[in-house]
Image 1 (spheres, helix red, strand yellow):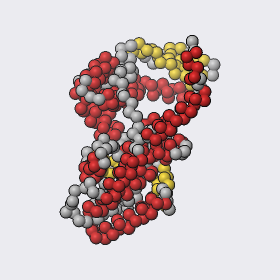
Image 2 (tube, one colour):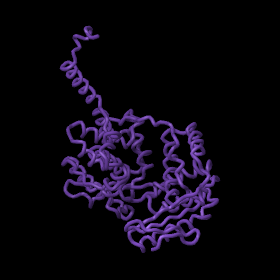
Image 3 (cartoon, rainbow, N blue to C red):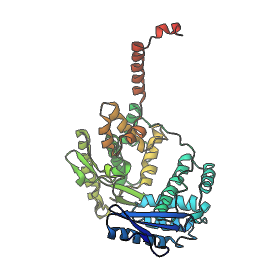
Length: 403
């Protein structure tokens, strides 16, 4: 390759040591700015390949995205993401885009979107929405605009430097022992439930939810993981957790767990294994009574009355909500059972790495920040230790003598 300039618009070539180099000065069609692109490689053929790819990208971008609006882009983006993201995630993305972003910014051309435009939208949303909701809007828009940068539609992501209201950190809920005993007692008797004319299915569901509550409290499984468990994944006293229930707009289906680290094996104590075996017998007897009406093709441990996936709506409206209200804990969430379980193990000597692995977390900091709470008993013990420490090292008797 000879040093020198080729025809106008094709760049300049030269050799620097053992590397072949090429440089092009051009005008960015998206921003109107003058730019310089330099490419080098030890191989002449590899350099030409890189140049060809770059020139194709310039041709593709030149005028192709001119006039593209935020609404048009987000619709294309959502369609592309639906192939690689879970249905529930895409449903959340669509809801945020169509409810919040597109109504405010849909007519803006992508190249004309600035930080102040987005900040104005976020400030407006902050007047009527919770800080966490505003943060979700920013997060989804940021992800979309990051992809726009990668595709060469825009040069920089204008969402990055915007600000949202500070989210007040909520401390993990730590259930006291008395609270847990009350929940178990009520769940076992079922006295909080109204009398039902469904003489077969009602006792089945009542017993099932009690067993599910026991497993949830002992293992810390996520609700979707718990109700996706199948009998074939129980080997001796070990449950394999490798599925999750995803529910989008009332439609339920089995999917993979939340993250790769969520696939795990969870051992259960012998007492709970015995409870599960009794439940398996109860389920089998129930299936025999219902015959073809009970269709448990997935061999699920927990089902609805017809053998299919448990509905979140039915679980909450017909059992969980009445239970927590009857227990005097109307704000208790099912997910708090997970926090209670992990907090109990952490406070009774199980190391945090094991607790985090049990929870299916990829980062131990997630377990500690969002799931480990202090019970009253733990707080009292902490104060006793603090008092002993103070007496041992702090000269409180001489406090009046200090300067």
